[in-house]
View 1 (cartoon, rainbow, N blue to C red):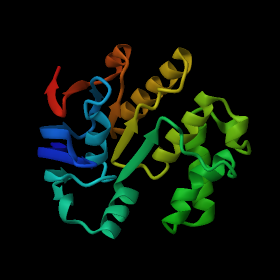
View 2 (view 1 turned 90 degrees about the vertical axis):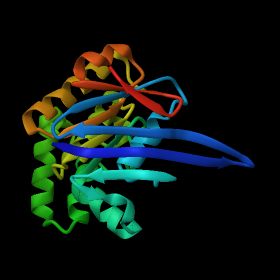
View 3 (view 1 turned 90 degrees about the horizontal axis):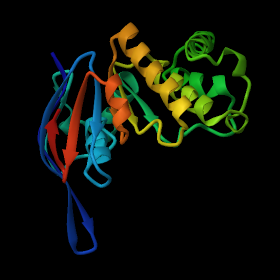
View 4 (view 1 turned 60 degrees about the horizontal axis):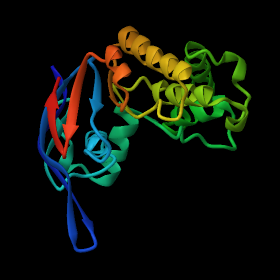
Length: 224
């Protein structure tokens, strides 16, 4: 069953008087429970495609369907609620709140959804335990290594048990050892929980972790 379907997707940006065609008719399906890699050269449209599928941007034209729902007609408020309830996000710059501790960065999301404080804290600590950070709960981001900060970001993405996790080059700022740890963690979470993971990567060695690779060139896709 396709959890994400994209049909004839275009995204055109205005750069002064010039039209920049970031996506040129992408059509693809992603199956529930897949760990999919999106790869291609710089500027090919990888991040643009991820942003359309994850509802962080709107396409110029084309159709995006998630879990059978045409999300193109959702209002901004409905898109925000949909993202909160169904999606998790991991970015290469971690995007942690610098004034908050490790556990605060993670339990902030379920609390924002109205879940009880005690339940939110317990869930956050459980997830942080799974990513090996039980001993870093009270540390601020600046007191953590890059690999630890990215694991906090993954825990935050996982805390609400989202159906889909979108990751935009999550290992770009990490050394090879921490990159491998992050990819192994993604694979483990994918296999244990059956969550769909869509990840952008520029490293060929990451391919072994993916169930499937979608290659993007000049805003168009092909599969390997």
